[in-house]
Length: 223
Image 1: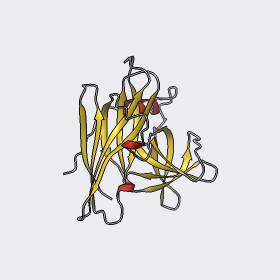
Image 2 (image 1 turned 90 degrees about the vertical axis):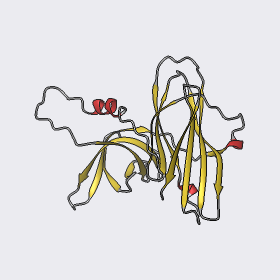
Image 3 (image 1 turned 180 degrees about the horizontal axis):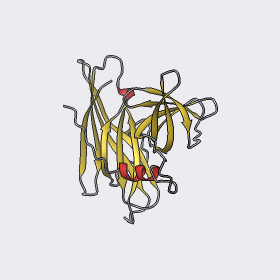
Image 4 (image 1 turned 60 degrees about the horizontal axis):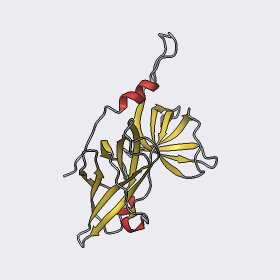
């Protein structure tokens, strides 16, 4: 059975930043926005041309108020305040009001971490399945530089088309003094596990927590 873990308290700070009124204009109407993880695609000039929602809808970018530029003709995971708006031809597009980076890289096999696997603790605020991604919001309590990655501990497939994948969060904190908390956004790419002949992927994702224990989250990846 697929398990989902949600916590929506993280929405409030970003929404408050977006919905702060400008002056005393009582006639101002706030845009109807969503706050979601998205996959964004750039054009030849590096500007964001379209976004793919985790529900599978592709939306052209009508306007990117952040003016973000990334590598040309590539994709990136973002978290964004955006409005889904109808266009003159009856289609829909996305107007991006704010966005943040999401850490998203392909998992590496455990033996490829030459200096060993670091498992400094984190707190999982929320974790859930998106479209071809495992999304998570992490609270990191230490100050200083942090390094994140995803460790591929084990991938086992059988003749029936079932693939069992065990992943672990790599986290290296330069400082060990818990001075304050910071939020990190991460998405694990999963499409590489949907190989030919695979009918079902069972995913197990483990993190080392501040309580001094390993917590594992179990999902089924539908593709």
